Image (cartoon, rainbow, N blue to C red):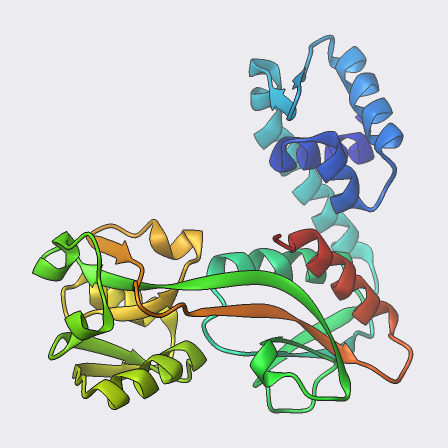
Length: 280
């Protein structure tokens, strides 16, 4: 059994198309296609059904998937058992808070799996780092910035609050409402300035730093929070998400790299992976 073909098979199934798998594996599409065809001939079964938007696994493909994952994991474990410990170089990546655990975990997983010769160290965004994932407001003149995600902000409201039933919500509607204050958050700071001008006051029930805690407190009915529109967040139960009608709050999250020196191979790899995750 060809392990490389199994690796390509797993990538195609997880990514949903041969082109996406090719980008993920950093290899040409014809090589992926050839490997899949050879695997299908060897197993005497069709593994994918091709359609306009990509591919869909057949029943045989779905049966093969967990077995292929297990075999690839075992092969990797065998290699690790007999290989000499690598001298890994430390790669410091500065991260702002509240990027969304799910999407950041996927990005970092791809980076660490591909750059096996580095030891990733996550640091605060204001510490010295090889690269930073930040918003445009945190960018400095010595850095080059490439956008990854464009996030709008929403009000996360407990489903038990009467405010969740309103079709339109304006800043004035937040006056004296129980609120989860998450900082640092540039959007919340902007909203606070407008509320101060209009004499709107919130009932602060908790002060926290992470989105995950904010969403958890909203779900528990403690108060309202301002959160970025990230799918993993807006799929939460017991929460109604609403836009503010009289203010537009958004942010751009991206990769910041040193501007005036040649990038290392690890920096270039991270740049490529971030480009794959980029949303329009």
